[in-house]
Image (cartoon, rainbow, N blue to C red; front, side, top):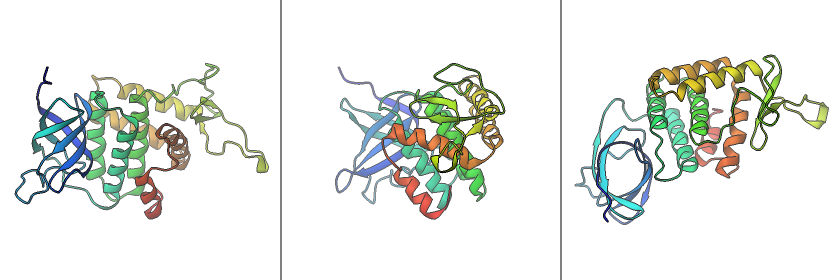
Length: 267
């Protein structure tokens, strides 16, 4: 039985690569169907109407169909809203795209995450050239994505013991142990210098719970996440917490877009 054709589906292009001299394979994030692989036939021809539309970080309405793992793109329309970003904003957006491709399975719908991602893209494209602002948006998105993918432990209690958090004590987020009490640095023996106090983790947990509530508009949910990220104190400490978890679940020491950003700026 043939798969039904999908029409008027909200989507973003995450990545593309050559398929033939005239065609591309697209990795697309859709609202109702999750990540989908699409063949954009003839899109590289000068006469193709898709050439100026199929760009990353641009809101689209698409149609596609087909029975195989790779569907065929039938239509694509730019929905407007913001211009194509450049420079650091573009790199930050491509970093978010790479995370989606690595952490989300194909054909697994994440409608709420899609709405939050759309707000993240808007924030990156509309924000002034401020490194701290972009970094805060990325930290918020990392946590939202990990939560949506089921890879983020609860942040309102210690994972292994179930113990409550002391607001003034330090805690670390680890890939295998979840949230645990930080070990005090001891000379050359190491320790958890990048820990966050319990109060910060509790604030992030509350913001994440709000973000998962469908009744809360996505724009408002992202604002609450950004407030919690800014309130978490040292941005480098939160970055180290999320980085360990992301690298573990992505199975890589460093994401390709992250390496580029690190070479240019310390986002």
